Image 1: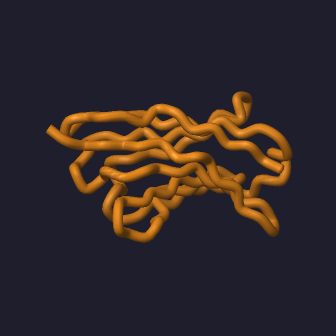
Image 2 (image 1 turned 90 degrees about the vertical axis):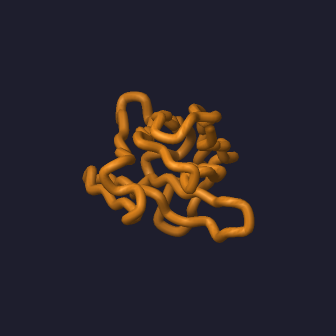
Amino acid sequence: QVQLVESGGGLVQPGGSLRLSCAASGSIFGINAMGWYRQAPGKQRELVARINSGGGTKYRDSVRGRFTISRDNAKNTVYLQMNSLKPEDTAVYYCNAELATLDYWGQGTQVTVSS
């Protein structure tokens, strides 16, 4: 089992920045990739960014160039640096860990971009 604890959400004005953190514990040796997803009210959950065990990254088009996913292996933590935030980035952000046959999810952290 893998436990994921997210932090760093909040309210920010358009153009502002936030950094989300996701600390993993448990059977972390089985993790192939970690990612951040988001879900806005009335919408499906969507992939925001993903980083695999080799350090390769993937971003959805709408956040590329504004968001950066990174990891600190020593701390078993993945980060999502979000810059130039827009109102359409408002959502609950979830951390995800991909294992061979299972996915694990964090509890979610709210990000609200509003003036």
